Amino acid sequence: MQEGQWAHPQDFDRVLTSMCTEPHPAAREAAERFLATNPGDPGTYQTVARLEERAVSLLGGVVGLTNPAGYVTSGGTEANIQAIRIARNRADTDDPNVVAPKSAHFSFRKAAELLGVELRTAPVVDHRASVDAMAELVDDDTVALVGVAGSTEYGVVDPIPEIAALASDVDALCHVDAAWGGFYLPFTDFSWHFGHADIDTLTIDPHKVGQAAVPAGGLLARDESLFDSLTINTPYLETTSQITLTGTRSGAGVASTVAAMEALWPTGYREQYHVSMENAEWLADALRTRGHDVFGPVLPLVTADLSVPMTDELRERGWRVSKTGNGEMRIVCMPHVTRSMLRSFVADLDWY
Ligand code: 0PR
Image 1: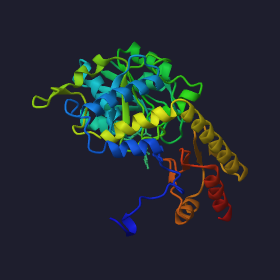
Image 2: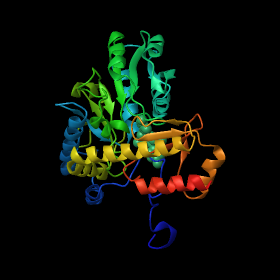
Image 3: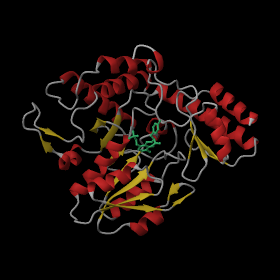
């Protein structure tokens, strides 16, 4: 591991697909310091347990909660699974279903399969959830409605207040997936969090736009009692119960979340939002000028109808690019994506 191909991880300088990014230097340093700590055993690892409380409090400030409940998960997948688990465990039905837009992340399919919940997906309009279409799918066995704030493929924001109102009409919980969008959205006019709508749980991932180390996801709830139905007894630990999905957890993720957020919230994240959004707008213009059909940016993410051979050629040249389910090229303007990177990307497109 000292030398050769394993000595260094990949550079980010041609990565246009990832929703992870270079951690903030303070996050990197904190992650290393807390590598051998386990927030899954807070009785023994008390320092990291206190840091997790700090992380939840900082995350609460981002998502409009004055008295936040939650924990640092292994990522958006765990947070989404746990949110659906809460909804399923609280509801009084043998045949639970969850209603989500088709654009919801595939982690909800994992949740449905694991939890024995039917996932009903509603058509979208312009890539956004249609509340009318969701309303057609709800019934007495609906335990949760999902809205996405910053969708994986197109970066759009669903009408969260309307989805929350529909959830409350059918006595279901409302979960918002802001795993990717959560650190960009505070600087927009969108209604997406606990302060804007009557939502119950929310996913926001520090290891994405939050610039913490991997793994660090976040699950927040409007009230601590929502976690009651997840309690599992842990008789031989100093703390005698757990509400998390995994047992041993990453102290590095927790510590780096606090370090990144203390360094960046709110000024650094605000600047990053503006830089990333301007980059995405610049790229969208450059692609439109070249005759491509472009969607976005709503948040810093652009899709365009680039041909498959073109995508293959770009990959040959080292660009990490991916495609949507509809075959469009998708470019995620994460903090590591700079204007000069995009200029050289467009220059390679012009060569083609
Ligand atoms: N919710 C949304 C809206 C997401 O975009 C993602 C992941 C998740 C939940 C799940 O989060 P975790 O992957 O943390 O469990 N979206 C990206 C995707 O699936 C994740 C990703 C990140 C993929 C970095 C590649 C990569 O290099 O495309």
